[in-house]
Length: 347
Image (cartoon, rainbow, N blue to C red; front, side, top):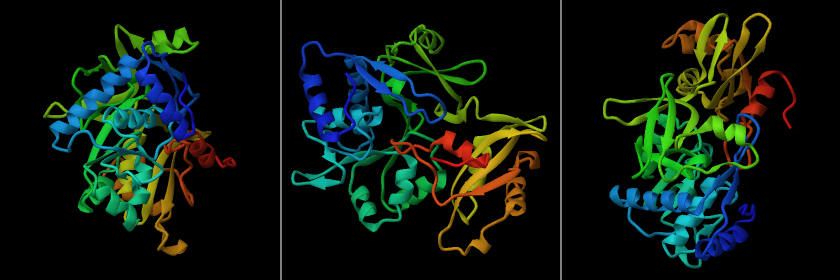
């Protein structure tokens, strides 16, 4: 069964799915943020294992238990499915498209970083989010400054890491949920295991064999364990480009640029280049309160990066955007960014 794109229909589908004696497997299409979408097959056991483990972790964090969830993510993606399932298991129909309805306010929600970035500038959204027990934030890199800003506004943020292939977020603030295993390969590639792992990709046994080994899902992300044993996600394994013979980790460059006071949002990509092989390009949204002439130019941004990182990592070009291109689930569309960085029209 593929959950509907219509939230109300998806709630009805999943309510029947939870009550069925023999429920079909869920078919979740990935966002395709860095390539072609995949069709992930999830068993009911995996989805329930994730939902119950999430509820236990939130309870252990002192965030309350059994509250309603607000659905502001697409209902056909795994994060949206889990919002609906968690709310139904707690005995509540989720709030759809807002923070409250005639039944009352939601106690939890799940967001992607781009959504939170926009919401912290809205007093109404801030008030609603600050009144919740917790806001789960996942689906992409989380800017530490954004998290600090949100928490200073009274919003309780729990950073999650996971994928459609793990029935959603399965590592909360660096600590795996109960029953979830985390491993690191020799190249630092993150592996995730346990009852939340998917059953394979529909119609693609070769990809399943490459990605699903001995009960472990082999992610495309690199990571490390900090001194407390918490998982730190460093970025995608393929987020390192070779530019002028130098390996450049794009997430590190993006993190440095996001600390610039005039830049609202930043993503860094690599594009083919005759001189450099791969050119590092920064795509940014400038502070709307600044006049265009006051925004930093390429030389200033290269100097900003070189103050803390090797100058060879600094961007060779910059592209200013009115907004970052997004996929339907709110994640940044990196394929569209590469097109913009290459000077192509973005649909």
